[in-house]
Picture 1 (cartoon, rainbow, N blue to C red):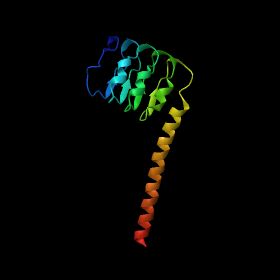
Picture 2: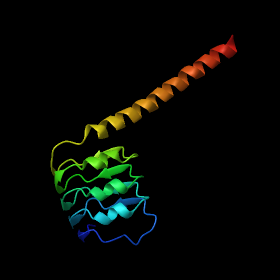
Picture 3: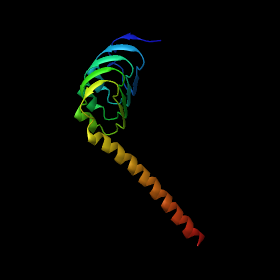
Length: 137
């Protein structure tokens, strides 16, 4: 079942953590009131008819981890401030009419975070082996 129209104003809802409206026939723009949901972690607006630009109010979403606005008619450039959202680790803006590049800071932070996790796991494994060998000796 698809829902036609624009994204309804949901700003009265408290504690929203996920907004999943993908694969509908939603038109209009990404609403600026999305930036008021301080607890929002996931936004899925992909595969719709959304147009306009990516609103800079999304930078206020400190807990945002996943943003998928692919397969729409979004134009303009990727807002540089959005690259500073601390937990944002998955972004899909493909199949739009965006120009320019996603800031390298955005890509680098994700790679560094994953590298840190891998290094932590490797260090844990090395320490575990050292302890195991020490106890056997």
